[in-house]
Each structure stands twice: as C-alpha cells, then as structure tokens.
Length: 142
Image 1 (spheres, rainbow, N blue to C red):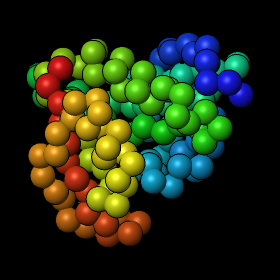
Image 2: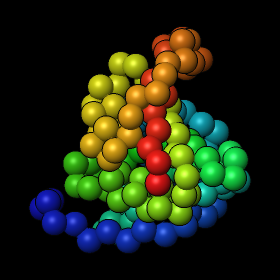
Image 3: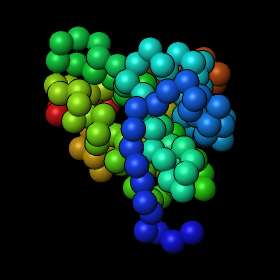
Image 4: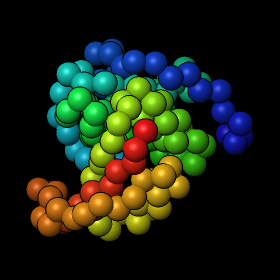
C-alpha cells in the first residue's frame, strides 16, 4: 500500500463496533474499553479503502475540559497520518483543555502526543487494571 491514502472521517455508529473491536484487540497498547460504551461519547472513525482503519473517542468532562478516551489505528494502516487526523478533529471540536492518559511504557504514543502539542502534566500510579502500570497524564490547550 502506498503512503498516499484517501481517508474519510465520520461519526462512528453501531455498524462500526465490530471493526472498532477488531482494531482495539489488535492494539494491546491502547485502552481496552467495552466497545459499545463508545457510542455514549464522541466517536470518530477513519475510513480507508472502504473499511474502518482507525477510531478515536472523546468526552467533555467540564465546560472547558475534554478527555481523549481512546485512539487506535489498524496495524495495516499505521504511520499514514490517521491517528494525527483523528486527534486533530476531535481536539478542534472540544475547545479548552484536552486531556489524556497514556501508558508509561508506551514511549511511541508519548512522543506522538508531544508532536501534537500535548505536554506531560502528571502521573497516575497503577492506573491500568490489566497490568497495574502507571499512566502519564498529558494535556493540550485547544
């Protein structure tokens, strides 16, 4: 597959949940949420070559604060700008402070978020129940 990639972004729906679940399962570094719960929040999917290639989900937690709950891209579509576009669109629709947590060991994601302007703001020890790994809290002002 070439690096040039036609991508459409749209709101996610119940029809996308099976694809989202597959992407999440193929992304052990991502949070492992109960996928149907995403429909309660702002769910955005990237569609490439007729299939869901990635997703991001966010929620507003206060008038001027929002949280990125999860972001994952199908391994076959990684490093093509999909995650960057998903986060940019969600952040632009959630003005104020945009927060996230990322596994301490996920250095690639931490570098990625820093490239988007996020700063490390703290740590939550034992945050991830599957491993008791700590989370780095990051934010950006949009």
